[in-house]
Image: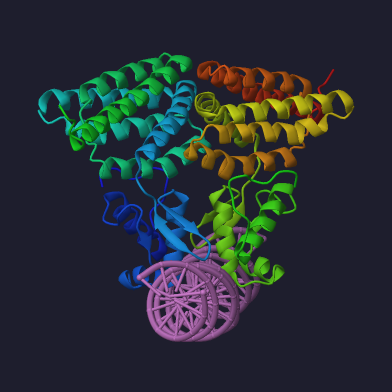
Length: 234
Length: 234
DNA sequence: TTAAGTATAATTGTCGACAATTAATAAGGG
DNA sequence: CCCTTATTAATTGTCGACAATTATACTTAA
């Protein structure tokens, strides 16, 4: 994994460790989306008791990676197109506001650090022909820094602690390691500019457009996939 | 309790019931904010095993009413002014977007139902001298309807399933059963108008202002309380 | 008296077993 | 042959006990 959740301390208890393994398995699709979870089976697989497994399952539920029903059991959440769009709309709201708050609350040192990071990535981008690196790590890194820069614990917990696990899941399962690198880079630059200008309103607007553009990019991709799957009569 | 969380099914398991009792106790302040939670003590008090209690505690953690640290234990979240403001900023982002989506996605029947509800409250408001009723139930009712009207499960879960428990907690503990009834009523009217006009942009703007106004109202109140507590030298 | 270190007590994490509920299977009637 | 009902099997919920970690109290040395 390239980047850890920056808000969580290291796993100390075995339930934590199993949670991380399960989280990875779900995000990467090793546990199929929508599939049922058998507690006895999983407990046996990880060599732990059902109690500790249930503790791990509770954490998975906290970041919306599984869903539980009383007396029925747990299922891995399923990856639907509607769910993906809903997720991006939620991101637009939350990260937009986080960006506005970052413009108000980030320290000058934090801003300088972000500018350096972006300049560093710019150098890499020019050198590397494969821009996948920036899209993956650079993008996530950028967004995390903005969110943390909001200095709003509520926003940080919601976005980093919950939404982003789902985002990564969708990214993996729908295979979106995608283009838009150069455009995204420019958009990041403009956002940082607005933040360093302490222009919260513009910063929020740009961040919302940035995420909306990403969402529309996905919608287009999916539309194309569907068109390919359903060959028209011509 | 006047209004139940509209997204959750009835509690069937004993852990669910204890969860609801604890939730009530925390929201109402019977369990002091910031206080430590003793698992053996609580389990004994509710006549259940520690396993069941821990299941209930996990649900409390899901709606951010308690915080757990590994090998140390659980504490009730504390109610700070900063936390309250952070919460309202988050609400502004999420409910603003929910309102925009409601303008796009609510059915005509849902809109008509909201208009009827508001008209009904208007009649009550004229008759009743005590406007506390509207502020309490009417306001929460209005916001829930808008959120559900977004038809966005992600937003619904985040706001109704998590944020609103904290909102109620702050309302109780800071004793905000408050004025702003008539103004809030007008604001609600305008928001519904924007929704029925299918004007998502305006609907979001108005909802954000509505929540921001509520936040500023609180800030003023707190400032006054502080001024009263610290008598100036004159 | 204070400070550090040790020993004790209390709390949290983990385990395996039993009870209650749900799902699967078999039997019977239409 | 299909649908309903009864019985069995499997899964989830709950319990009490033990292990590991943390907090408290006590002892000892400076």
